[in-house]
Length: 232
Image 1 (cartoon, rainbow, N blue to C red):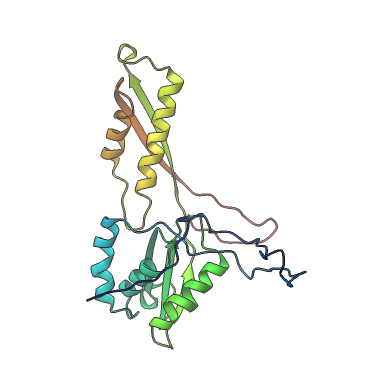
Image 2 (tube, rainbow, N blue to C red):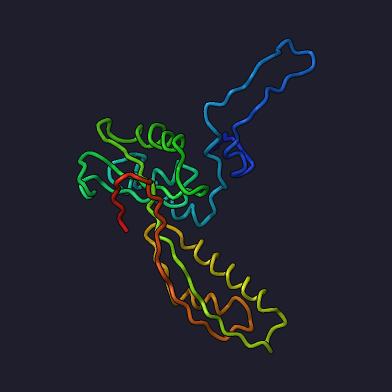
């Protein structure tokens, strides 16, 4: 059997966000004074899936049969067809607070940016999810509600084991912490304290041990002179 596949190739994620274009014409063209106006910024381009991602996503996509019935289906469809998705979680309205029957809530952690743009939400709902579910099903995209970590680490080093300065070791430790946290920034994942501590110790060969504490904090931007309720 011969399978022929046609697709558009791009410079991975680089085209995302492009909004300014000019019409390219030959010197003998009769076309002139034409302005190009974009309706929305370019979205949807991404890195190709790794072998591990294909092994993880392929059986789940097969289980959904390309239709959205339950929350698991909507998560799988979003991962499969929406390129700016690092992680996604979905839930039915019957478990939402307040209850909203016949509604599916979808929260996406984008690969680029903190939240999905209005255009990206429209594409996800109208072009990806809506055509694959019942006409009566309502789909609501929910922005993430962030709780941040403040990591305080006292690192103890043996100066005889390294030629690096204190500042250089601090820089290595900070970068290692950022990399460790970035790899675990997905829904339904836990920060494993023991692995974090071990990762800090491995930042540089002169580090003997560390004492690390973690605090949680939330950033709130209240509106001045307006009554409001904030949940922490």
